[in-house]
Amino acid sequence: MAAAIAVALLAAFLTPLLFYLLATRAKNPLPANLPPGSLGLPVIGHSLGLLRAMRSNTGERWLRDRVARYGAVSKLSLFGAPTVFVTGAAANKLVFGSDALAPKQPRCLPLILGRRNILELAGDDWRRVRGAMMQFLKPDTLRRYVGAIDAEVTRHLDAEWSAPAGRRKTVAVLPLMKLLTFDIIATLLFGLERGAVRERLAAAFADMLEGMWSVPLDLPFTTFRKSLRASARARRVLEATLREKKARLERGESSPADDLVTCLASLRGDDGKQLLTDEEIVDNAMVVLVAGHDTSSVLMTFMIRHLADDPDTLAAMVQEHEEIARNKAEGEALTWEDLQSMRFTWRVALETLRMIPPIFGSFRRALEDIEFDGYVIPKGWQVFWASSVTHMDPGVFKDPEKFDPSRFEIPAPPYSFVAFGGGQRLCAGIEFARVETLVTMHHLIRRFRWKLCSRENTFVRDPMPSPLHGLPIELEYIGVASPRKSS
Ligand code: HEM
Image (cartoon, rainbow, N blue to C red):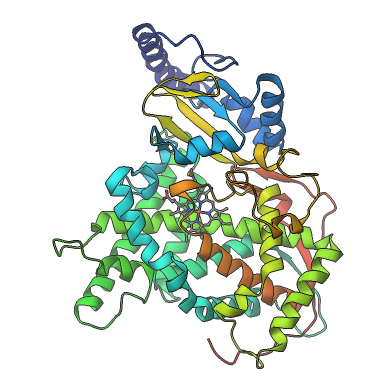
């Protein structure tokens, strides 16, 4: 019965789409010099093949096979739209630099995050929203929050990782890292204290994520419907938070530097009006929650996974962090200056991101016919970029399968390392991610050693890389940390 309903729904959904595609193709004949490759079956195209490969952790190979067969530019069909897949530094430059390409997200994203979220915006609207967010996320502002992030990390480690003296403890790393990054965002960016409101946001957010990448069918019992409802609950919390922040600002009880939401609410345009609308502030708080939560938690999880089996890298990191700790008083919080000394640790993070980029790739939409590499990308088509093929290209990164942080002693060639994207849409949260990663790794390395519980060291992409069972590790407390002096 359920299967019959699903088939009927699918037919109802696909048939008009098929007619639409045939009609538009008849109206706009395709240019002759399209990239090589086939568009596959109508509508279904190559989506199932790619998704299956990602779930079995062969997504990178799936793309590499395409490149071996067709070259760095090829056509295919993904998620119901004709697509050109591009890879390599020149293609990345096009993706991140060309005004003829606009961002394009899966259809479910604006429905869940809100239509005024930065990922949907272009032109002046994008510049205004990005500029406002960077007021808080730029290094000059973030340097003031290192102590607060340090406090959040040590509190988290005390509560979730530590075991009674002499006892070993097993933890699953990924869920804990997600909890930590959620807590850091809730405190630092939303200024939400621990308690019922924050727990309501955490619960709504967890439900919302489940349907984030699902088929956007708003029908009873679909994951997407559940996600939409959870998104409405999360928005209600953020709207109430914004109202409270605005009231406090008006009463002179807070400062724009308190948190991202207060900062955005305080900004004024030339006309003296609030620079971002309330809707924009809430939509972009939702983006920050999603963009900043899964990505950094995945990075730290895979660093921990790698360090368990790489004693040389671990030893070099231990040395770096011991030197920093030597110059600090007992329990003293880290500072911005300390983070600048964590060069090796950040190179380990970059190498981890090169080999396992949390964001597999994403889409753009051609606003006009674009000529690239001797082919035409027709107006209206999707462009799909993926970081992994460039990251694993031996012509760019020698011995790409080897984990070698020293390769980042000099900057990678332009548009070759794209884990954070590139160009004007470069990740807005790089500095934030760098601060939370370095602070967390410092305290973990000073307190614990660990080994992997499972020898089956694989992961799947869903679409974020997720290690088997959340990466269970056995922790040994080495007891060098001491109670904090300041926060
Ligand atoms: C290891 C951590 C992170 C990685 C690997 C990462 C990766 C990326 C990538 C690849 C993009 C570009 C997507 C595209 O061009 O299609 C992006 C954009 C973005 N990221 Fe991150 N991100 C990370 C952490 C964060 C954090 C912590 C925040 C917020 C605090 C954040 C906020 C954003 C925002 C707002 C954008 C959109 C920028 C724009 O369109 O102008 N990210 N990120």
